Length: 271
Image 1: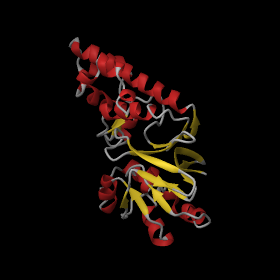
Image 2: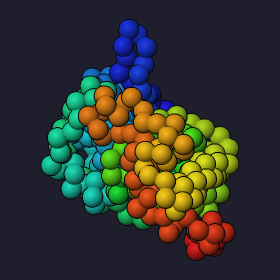
Image 3: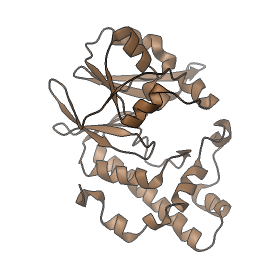
Image 4: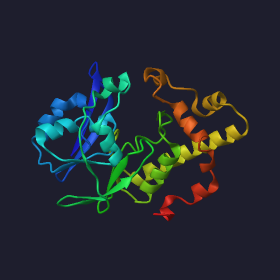
């Protein structure tokens, strides 16, 4: 079962957050600005546990509510647990889009989540955040990937995202040969392996182009204009929290990663 939540303006959704229910397991809790709707729906479902992909408020916003009103245990990465216990202040645009992030507690995830019918592997997939995990069900090829995917040609990062972690996590996910993605932004998507590979190829090409220009003594502004077409306006709306410069900076900080060996020998060979 797939849930879709969004802040709307003049009846139109701005940004959709997806979370999922499978075999009495809830994966992520949705944003707090739909808390009343989430409570109403979840009360009709038999839920044994909640598993969280990462700490961002559109994924953890209803954890406190689920604990207090439904008494359901929550499981997460240790870093997610730490952040949920003492949520940081965040930018106004995030509060507008997804609401507050009430504190909540959780138990550490094991390497596997067992339900009555399924056995989901817990895969650490950092990049979007250091605590990001995905859940893989090998029999059906399902990959509950949180914000690992999001889209194939995205060229902006939140502050703190890491291009090497992103690409390594994509390689790790591709090595699983998944069939279906369950994405926090796009929902259910088929052709999972091909989508992940196209995203990896797109970002690899961007990284190699940045490396080429940087090593030819182009400055950051020249590279930004030639590779990315300039900064996005949303950078300013986000209070300098989300933009193309963060992707560019992460690539420049990790130029040595973009070499033939890393492309020729993906983590498929190391899995």
